Image (cartoon, rainbow, N blue to C red):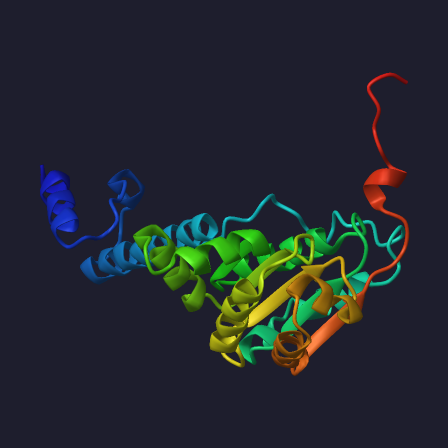
Length: 241
């Protein structure tokens, strides 16, 4: 009876429901029961916040640094990635760029760092460039786009994948520049791109806007130029062996 009353009060206070069967421990004082209750509330609140961050991050898959084949891709080391996992670079709004041809591990490493950052309590958002451009273009007419962009602007880390795979118009390049300017020195960005810097003006369509975008991205940035044969091509799986 008392448990039902307490649970009703918990609901009215917008607290997390608790299984009181775990509280049946003899010898606790009233203050110790209260401490246990509040400790459990904090645990449940943190768990709920983590689930919310993961849902909003929209990570494409669970990737870890431990899963990455550093023996195959020697342009970056495991030690470098583990050093980045202290996330002081996020605290100081530094950027990371993974550049290189398809299937050399750019997205894997970006996702792995994003996953670690989520586990460390940072708000992370993952999206491909084409998706970001669509959000920016529809932000004035779509409440859904407005809501998503608000989440992105509040994030500690924004991962933009597949930069350079598709060309963008001059209008879209200007929208991208405005977006990156809004994040500049406030939010960390991870970029993956199959294009070297000398090729960016080709898909952005304007040398001036390209210079302005790169200026903001590389000002405080760790750049990894990844080379070599594509991992998926090297380790392709066939139907008929």
